[in-house]
Image 1 (cartoon, rainbow, N blue to C red):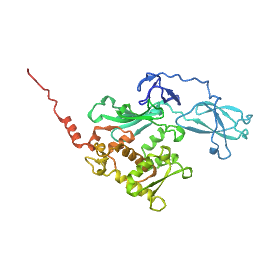
Image 2: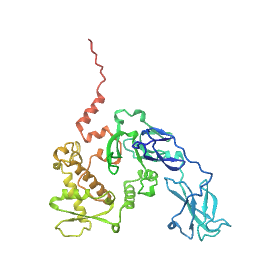
Image 3: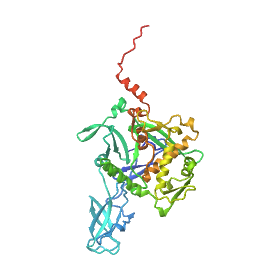
Image 4: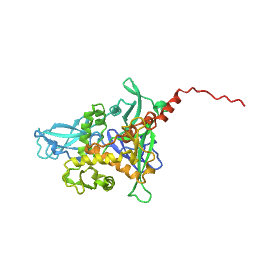
Length: 417
């Protein structure tokens, strides 16, 4: 049985982990998120199948060891583990032989030019038990919320009240306690009825316990799950987290020689020119290196022009007089979305979209911007549970009045007719 994740519709596929194998399951018609579906896993004969050999990467060979082929139909979302073995006597190049590795029987194909007695290398998918999967958690020691991995390779939020006998105590039965009300933003995408090439996006808040986050990023780690890495780095100091994050950025950044983007803007029309130029850049090209030039100002962008562009444009966008943003009710150093932005600027949605691209590119390129957001907005970006306490940064008076409700006496109204 598998539970359909939230955000998955009929006909769409979602990953499921069964016996340490990642399977893609198609959601049947009429089935909604949260419902369970029965899946049939194809059975295979004992040992590892010879039908689909997997060629190993020659670059991993060293010390005269040859890389062998392991004939396997399995694909582990947690990566592979390297093994070494000596070629048995009587085995020739291209011939398969059986052995026991990591508690399972596998068939290994002897690589070319390998002789009996020579050491060869092969890889097997990493297997995790159910207990090991359930032990993967992201505990940030903040707000009592913990991310736990499920068999569909997604993280789910659980509010922890501490540990009992080494296990997290789930407080879902206390969901409607005032301090524990929490919601997570969920972005859903669907093709439009008129055109399948266009995609509609809808943003809504769902209860935190219903939100999920995939741990598989196709562009990173060859599509393997990042759950174990995230769990390990979540407990490390910030410097280690940043270093790991920069490593992931480097994997998807487009090298200069493979293409780059040149942006020309007029200083007197900086905001409009910058927005129009950024809107014309595709999602994939946002990972390329940008070079900026102010028209009629000769110079080579060696990094200084880019820093100036990010600083000037962000200062214009976050200026309260531009009416896109307003100050937090408790912190004048942080900005929140101005609820009246549409009254002051008919194109406010375009500018908000541009702001999002600007902040994303600044994070990607390690640039500094002249604006700091309120904590609830960062939580929305990260998919973190938003609680009633976050309301204080947006509307301190309303939050204070809600807190006073907890201290009011429950006086029953007695009416005599």
